[in-house]
Image 1: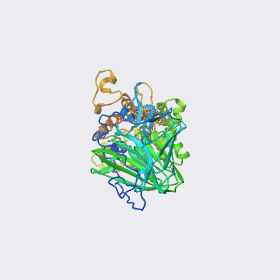
Image 2 (image 1 turned 120 degrees about the vertical axis):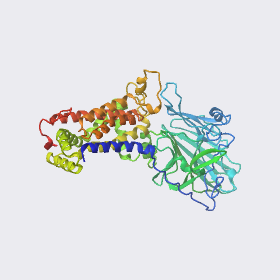
Image 3 (image 1 turned 45 degrees about the horizontal axis):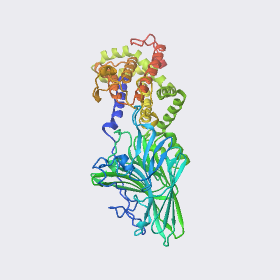
Image 4 (image 1 turned 60 degrees about the vertical axis):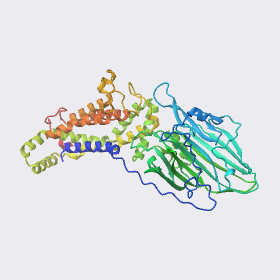
Amino acid sequence: MEQRNLFIAMAASLVILLGWNVFFPPPEPPPKPAASITADGTPIAPAGDAAIPGPPREATGPSAITAGGGQARGLTRTAALNQSARVTISTPRLAGSISLTGASLDDLTLSTYKQTLAEDSPPITLLSPSGGPDAYFARFGWSATAGKEASVPTSKTEWRSNDRTLTENGSVVMTWESPDGMLYERTIALDDGYMFTVTDVVKNNGTDATTLYPYSLVSRAGEPETSGLYVLHEGPIGVLNDTLEELSYDDLFDDGQSEIITHETTGGWIGITDKYWLAALVPPFDQPVKARFLHTNAGGISRYQTDYLGGAVAIAPGASHEITHRFFGGAKEVGLLDRYEENLNIPLFDKAIDFGWFYYLTKPFFYALEWFYHLLGNFGLAIMALTVCVKIVFFPLANKSYKSMAAMKGLQPEMLKLRERYGDDRQKLNQEMMALYKKEKVNPASGCLPIIVQIPVFFSLYKVLIVAIEMRHAPFFGWIQDLSAPDPTNIFNLFGLIPFTPPSFMHIGAWAVMMGITMFLQQKLNPQPTDPMQARIFMLMPLIFTVLLSGFAAGLVIYWTWNNLLSICQQAIIMTRAGVPLGGGAKKKPAAGKA
């Protein structure tokens, strides 16, 4: 097969790989059947699922939420917050409050992350209270056996606290006592990141023994907005039995029917993830729990919940019991998740970031970029530095490839003569060309090796740019203020000089144009197809890639452009040393033997 065919095939393969996940997303795994548990002494089952014990489903109620959108009827977020007394949360990373009604974590804002690049942009709101718009909260508690409902606190329970503010590395204490003498004390502590530690102590001051079941839940009302990227997971997620479980929202609402997916696990974590943010529950690492992903619909309102239920705890009169839950509510910062995984024994916590199939390449790429960022002070420069390192690692392979390509370019006059002589006899033409390659010791297949190597590098860097929050709103120079977003300029309005906003399908930024130019120049250094039709298709490749990559993250286009420039320099030097004119033509001296 000729060199040109290999390049066309590889380019087409790259186009297919880039577009496959967009047009043909992989099918989601079928939901697992819910487990049925009917052991004696189980806690009160949620309504509608009498065979499946678990924590109570925290319904926001049809009167509080409009259908389908999670918007409150007459209640703003502020009004919903004002319905209960609160303990303030104030740390360098987080702001918000804890509701004393239900002792819920339902008001959380990420102080260091803005919604947009605008100076006056508000910070990211992660959690919101029940009864308000887009309710999203975490709750902890106890389920009781039948007939003992009054012994446990509920979402309506009014807790007492003498503390007013939860600060970094601080804690607050809340208490409540049931009518039958069960005393509950809850201590909520917060570290210097996004990890809450919830320690529940229950003491039986009554006269009868009581059996309780500890639980934790994360509940989200309405239809969550997602980024729409098929290569990125957003929705219910967890690591159960050391296995990553990723479910789409549709998995829990199949054909209009609510699904409950149950796992029994020891350790792990479970929650709901967005592109950059995570709300996750971490049960005690040494105790078995029943973890669930579920969806309910009340009054036309979807609500998604992840929760876990601990084992039965028998508390005799005068006895007490303590259990510790953890809750992560914040940004998915790689270093922070790694720290929690190591220090708190949370398995595979970094898998909350969707590094994808090339995990063992993508994550090292991230750490390399972060190292270069601390060295150079700019993630765009870090991308360029990493590109140079990749080129150095694969230099011997690329060098051999470019030597072969230079030799192929020098053989073009001979190949044209063979085509003129055997143009009507394809079999004979291929035989003669193979004989020519063998005589000149040229391997036409070696030219595609750099492209094959570049594909996993390309996708790994692409993953880093779209999933790592460290890249979010990271500027380069000039007009690039967010390397994780597409280039904001557009050739169709002369890069902003004309007051015209082209439609999205006409978006081609300045960096994409530069990438197309460098690809065209690199193409001119390669052996040109001798067939006119193939030559025209080959010439369209830079244009196709310019349009295709325009919608990708600017950092990825910068990488591709810079990589092309380095390849052009390397290839030009090799061709000059081989005596092959850069503009084409016959070679001055046979150099194929060196290839």
